[in-house]
Length: 358
Image (cartoon, rainbow, N blue to C red; front, side, top):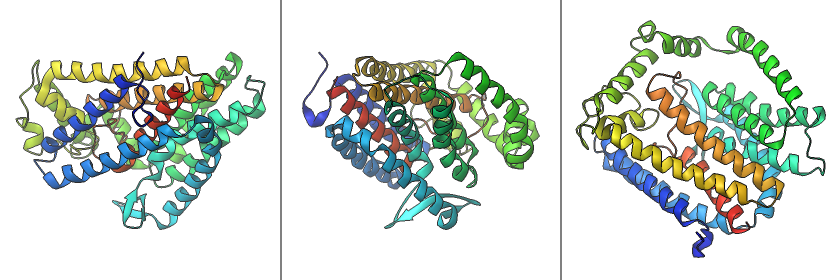
């Protein structure tokens, strides 16, 4: 039995893996930021707050969290609207909102509350089949925040939220006929998005995925330097603080989007395997909680969290090795940032809450 009574933490293995990645992330961040202790200290402060929040959420009954879902979702939508008009402008993008001196990215937080709200809505009916009416309402829940996020503009987070929502609908039990219809609609939507929605710089990011030389000083530069860093790590890596691409500042966004490249360069193939093993254990424990969950809501939402974790890790690593365009997805528990850290710890808190009742 892998249970503990400490602060609602009901899975010791999952908890230990979270601690390991979180604090190893601080060590890696020290290297990625050229030994900037101030940045590491700020991230460490965020970590302490997130752990406390996770403990508190793990003690709340899952049924109470379920009933809170629509209200949290509506609050996030209101905050997204506020961000669009009065958000903090960074490099032409309004993605951050400042409240009482603290800035955070609402789009990072809502990516877990969209699946939570979908799971709440789908669990309201005794009939668990997803008909056309339910499907329309589900897409309204998914597309409402995406409308505001894509205006910021933030295409990467919009796509992640869309995929998170689709995963939740799939876990809810969508029919094969409806899946075929959805696939057809998305096939039609792709050229429309390319023509009317994507901005020039977003199109350039996608094109540089196939030919980085198209934008050698922009997004193409990011991909090339990241691939050099990953490849130069070799089997055992160059050693902590000895990575040339990161320490000599060739690698951009070292603490966030491309922190995996820093890790691969310094710890090599063996280190990457160990990192993947820890993520695999975390995902496996989350899936085990999903299988043990008693309620329909808990099963759908915990399954969504497990799937989102896989999606985030695969997307970030794929960006670093040039398999996906640069979309600004961080590496869970390791990358620098408060909003992404907050959202992932809230999700883990809910997982522990679900497991306590399993």
